[in-house]
View 1 (tube, helix red, strand yellow):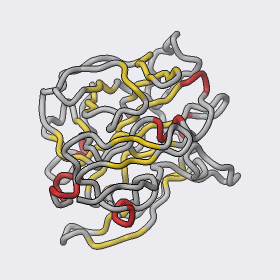
View 2 (cartoon, one colour):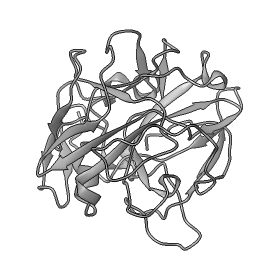
View 3 (tube, one colour):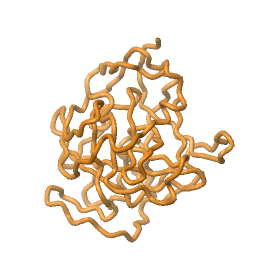
Length: 277
C-alpha cells in the first residue's frame, strides 16, 4: 500500500472557516470561495503550461504550481505540498466540500512557487468524474501544505477551477505560471523502488464507470491499496464526493517517521488491477 506522510495526528473541522481576505468573485463561476488565495498553474510532462486535457490522461497533470508563496511554517527540507481536487456543491460552504488527493506529498525547492509532482502512479480525472454528477461540470483544484510537527495547512489555499465536458477538462478560473522555476519531487519517487513506478503511461480499461489501470512497472493491487480522500466527514454523516462524508480532515493511522516524529499515514489510490513487472 502506498502511504503518504502529511504531518502530526490532528482532526480539523472543515466547517470552521478562517478569516481570510476573499478573492474577487469570478463571473465565470457560480460560487465565490473566501478561502482561495492565488491560483494553480498546470503543466505537462515537458514542462509547458496546459489549460485543458482528457479526463482519462494518466496522470491528470504532471505538475501543479502555486502562484503564491508557501506558508512560513511549511517551508524547509521537510515541508511538502500536495494537489487535491474538490467537488463544489451548491449552497454548501467551500470548507465542507469533499475531495481527493491527486499527487504524492512533494518536496519543493522554490518557496515562492511550490509545485506538486505527479507520476504514472497517480490517477486520471475520470476517477472523480465517474463517481457523481458535478455542479455545472466544475471541480476545484487546491494545494495543501504539510510539515513535520505541524497540522496540514488546509486554508487559505491557491485554487484553480476546471470544467469537465464529456471526456475533456478545461481551466475556467486560474492562470499560468512557470513550470520550470524550481523543482518538485514526489514521495512516490523518493520512497518507492524505481521498479514500482511505470516509465510509460498505463492503459485505462473498463470505460468510465469502473476505470482500472494496467501498465508495465505498476505494482500489484495489494501494493497499491484503496482509494482515499483528503477530506472529511460531516456531523450529518452524509456521504461525500468519493465515498467519505464531508467536514472533518480524517487522520487514519499514526507511525514513527524515521526519527522525525509522528505522521499521518494516509492510504491513497483507488482499487486498481495492474500487471506487475
